[in-house]
Length: 280
Image (cartoon, rainbow, N blue to C red):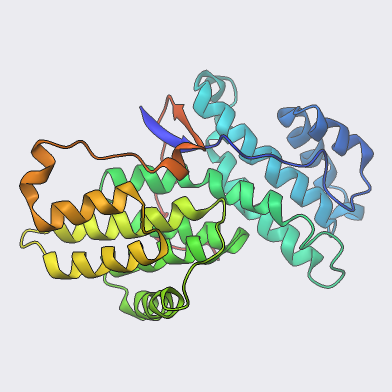
């Protein structure tokens, strides 16, 4: 069993500024498969080829279908193509943004839907990190960032990039985090869990190296604690950095901000084998 960030996502009743009432009805009733099927039929019609609203509805539907498959893997037996549902969600969300770029009818008013789609992708990041495939975790995250980005996801990108040796990406992000930390208290966001994860994952990796880099781990955790001074996960990691034996008597606390979104997923499925490379 692995964990997935799903709960706590509250979508609006339909795409804001949209005109497709039939699609809005499917959305409102959470008929995700019907919504995806209807969008698929419309997409092959010439008159809808540049319809950003259609692509946004489709992206959200496939993201939700992905979560349905995690809850009930038997859906994949019935519809094997759902194995690629989250990849479709990311692809169509990017298409929606591109098609809306000139007219600016949908965005930023529907950025909350893009955020929901990106947060769902944390399932893959969690999975790849848990099996220490950090390159694949960051590759998936980079795709998610094309759909939605904020400083929390960027921080996670920076820490994963540092782990994989991509200093060209990591160093500017980490320097920017240091500058932000000096400005004092930041506005809390519902994606703060991603930045907490960033510092936790990076510090844990540093401490688990064949020759632990304890001082660097302490530095990263000190930075994280400037943003989240009372965060139990980071406080625990710092205790481990000071004394590895601390883990023998103390269980690691959960990321409470992340737990607000957590449900249990009943299947692990890598959506593709070439995730180390970005899509064209």
